[in-house]
Image (cartoon, rainbow, N blue to C red; front, side, top):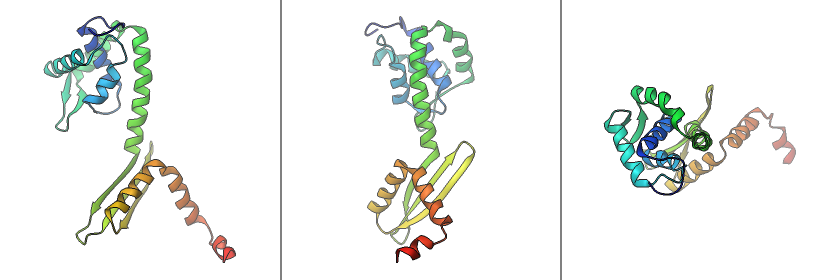
Length: 182
């Protein structure tokens, strides 16, 4: 065990990992579980890695082909049973970090921007914005160069709601603003 904290042994690290895996909204990579687990100063990287591997070996967690960790039914059951063994302050800190993580994951799934090269050398940028009810906007644009496609992706990810609002405003305008400016 590393520093001074509330987690006392590897069993408690396993409880904490299961607690996290049961509350994260989608499968996550190693780094995300590590970041969330290091909420207590007593946990170090090597103990964490060993405990995570043990949980996969004992089928409390599974690891997908793309290296994402997913809690199993066995893991969920044991997490519910053991979560009260975690110190309250660790659970509080963990819940705060999980809320932030889940917000980022939700945002990532709601805002999508990808690009692909066409056979003619041009690029198609696909932009989509969703909310809890479903798709809000799906848009495909053609770009002549890859750097333009990447720039459009980046700008869309930064402020998709603003772009959506501007498109809706433009489509709903009666064109009078343009005529009065000329």
